[in-house]
Length: 278
Image (tube, rainbow, N blue to C red; front, side, top):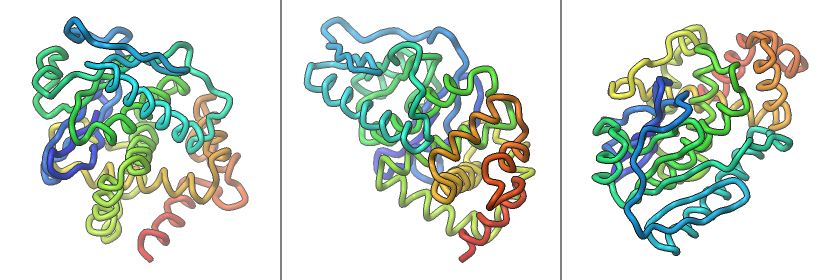
């Protein structure tokens, strides 16, 4: 899930519970994003008269042909970038993702039953959003969860939350300059002076999205994943995910894929700390 502000904007990041949601709140109140495991999303559809645009990977529903077409294009742009960044060149979703764009937050909350702070949600194969200033960043964040969850399948466990959320934050910042600036500031002001030990980042992921003091965890997770992708390359990151999907531990996956540079996650931590601290 994601949260954001009608005046500012980072889409947020969030605890991986059972559903995903995004919201528009000021930066000081940013909740986080979460990942959904529900097979069917318990939401009500759009009112009669909506339009649908189908693309290679999405079935987008919105009010008006122009809106449906515009958001379908945005979805494909995000999808292409996500697949390139994560190195998932050969991966294809089992079926098109359903994207529903409600007209505003009132309709979204009324028809999805999401909490007040939620600004978007990912349920199984569906992405639920609403029109507003933060939609672009939210879409990129939540779409990353959809792709990550489907690719990893049953391998998505508690200790991979930092990668799931980190990838979502990274893709959010890649899609939106305001989000990029906000997270960069959080890394500089809150993470670099006092990094969260990786053992805590992995094992103590936030469990509730409505808390206001977890943005530091999301900023760090996004920074670490972005660091691994930039330094190791997209294909190596894909191999890293594939090893994890096959049951390898994080240390085993790092050693097998990045052995020339990093032998363990501890080596990644040291290298990343040098970068953010410089």
